[in-house]
Image 1 (cartoon, rainbow, N blue to C red):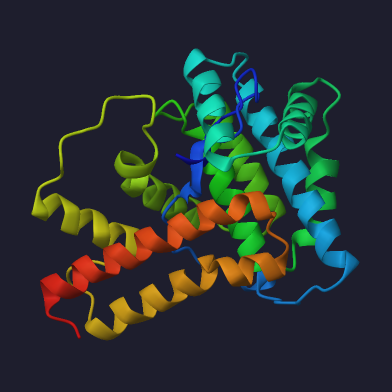
Image 2 (image 1 turned 30 degrees about the horizontal axis):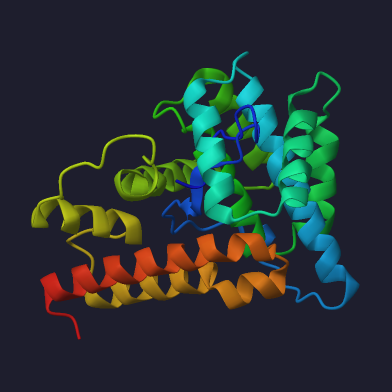
Length: 267
């Protein structure tokens, strides 16, 4: 699934499940607190630094989440292997990701200081923040369920980023809507969804309902495309190895929008 899921397991320590599928996709359409709305464009060496901090923090927090319940499952290990293959990481990148993941699992890992550093370099880029949270949600749900300890970590993470728990629940809902198509790489492919199920999933992915007006549907679509557009994410510091996942995310949003428009006769 897109990015990751709990990921990394052992080898990668579980990169982030295939969720990054981006980031897995986690289909989101989530609005962050206005405090994160500052959209400063980085340039030069600042971009490189933001990318490093994003990549490093992503894997460390994933490791923290993977270890919080005391064990890393075989499913997480397999998901990590598949994620590494999907992201086409170089050997050096794999070793770096594994190292950061293991740092997150260690007793010496400081969640607070790690998040403070992430906020310092990436916190004023809403799109990077959103992708980061999406990855961690997928990491927490890689087994298909979420336990109390992982839920607490996600809530602490959102508290640090000034993201309300309501928005967190919305993001989880979006992720679960995409889960059948982007998250279950280790399971046999499910039967094709019925047109009715596909339409319901598309509404959920866009964050709208069948009672939403055409204007509301178009607005939700434009917001999601803006949040996940690969070019914008590159400018905000998203590492190049994750761009493929972001591109897949926008493709799923586009498909969902087309399905809804076709059903509603929206031009």
